[in-house]
View (tube, helix red, strand yellow):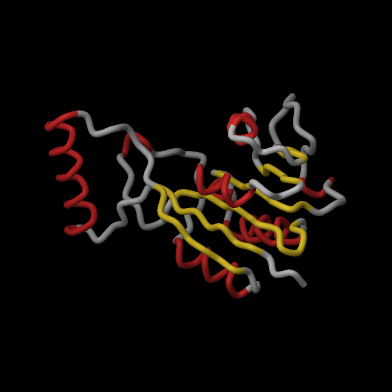
Length: 182
């Protein structure tokens, strides 16, 4: 989240796509974000600025989309990415985080609402081809290891997943993409 904040800190306006419970808004504002903060979510009854991106009639210095893309079929996900690019001002920054397609999750952590996953290199290529300066990140989520037993268990899981099965160690991937000046 610190990397995300550093990317959006100087943006005069920000649109949080999939704002949910407004937790990220509160975190960014507590960290010092002072720009205009608008929110969008499809849920009922929220205090969001927009219920649908089709309602947005202006551009933003930053667009944030954390843990939303995976809930959409591929065609809808690509349409969302394109719409967010349309809403981005020149020199604006887009931050996208989504589960990592190359990660093997614990069966107990599967989310039945996820319909498509993305690989970091695919997201990087999408934004790079669109002409944006793009940086990709692997995001590791999870509890602290917890002593020797936790460290051994975590190390064994890492070895099996990464070395034996060829999977990635990071739960999520993130891309920070900056639109050129013109």
